Image (cartoon, rainbow, N blue to C red; front, side):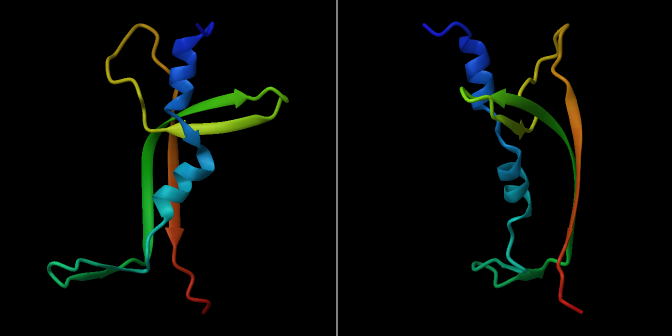
Length: 95
């Protein structure tokens, strides 16, 4: 049995921070609903949310910064440190 199973499980909940940001910003310029025929043109996205960060080191000593939405829903005496992610993305039309 691994020495620190709970730590391994906690780390598996976090994705590399670059992937988290990519998921939050990966949208098409025009979003369409095929059922209603409605469309929406996205000019900008502004996002602010709590973020749980984790720093991991692999066998070679390489660091990786991982993050996720907060994973702990029950308040305890020792809560993880939550950070705030503020992100603003705008479409560049090349003007």
